[in-house]
Length: 304
Image (spheres, rainbow, N blue to C red):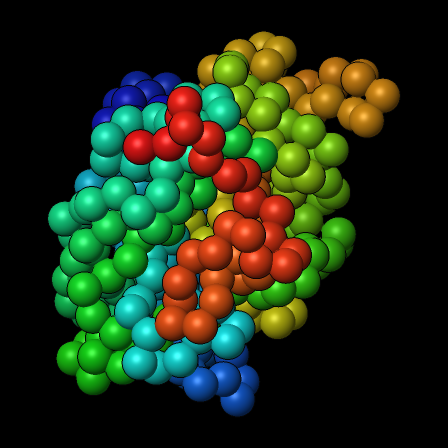
């Protein structure tokens, strides 16, 4: 979970790129908003540095933050008149990394995001009016509410949101990690799942483990992970084990249900997003008490 600047300097000096950025497309057939469809990303590059192929996921709907990547997203039942939402990592929050156990809801924000088109060009600027939800507990996510609705955004930019899948990621499925910050696509598969993924003070549940091809770098934090079978967002990119250390910052370890610790040096991970839609009701309103919502909830001691 490193800053993009550090990743850039490291890549230049060492020719390596095993860092995640911190402070720190989606076909949605017959949906009310009309999710973006996967197309060629001709002006972007793939993880090997070559031009993106015609099978690459579209950049339409992804966003670039000052320090991370993200995406304009919708829930499966979102409507065109609902306020738009941008999703990135909890560790990309502009006010700093949430502590373990901390959950932030309905916090004022004026953050801006660069919205990309299919070929990774600039489609427009999105502005937030609040942080709807942010945490690094159980998962690593920040959800911003925007000042405009999906319909207004699409009318002014031509860009539709990506759709969050409401089903669990599938082992073996091909995925694309689409970075708006670097305008790059990392293609690999879901290798499996970590019962618990621990990094420093934070622990995340049921994390997606990438196959080795996804060597994500600094600035890719918050990138949507697209299941290329469905074209929907199945996870959010967040970390990689850099040098084989165990459970330290930038070196996550896997912890089994029995407590056994496993380290996979050079392996990247993402946090599942299929549980998020259950926590949003009519009008894209957060309801952590909704049936089926399992997101961590704030306490009086940790909320802000």
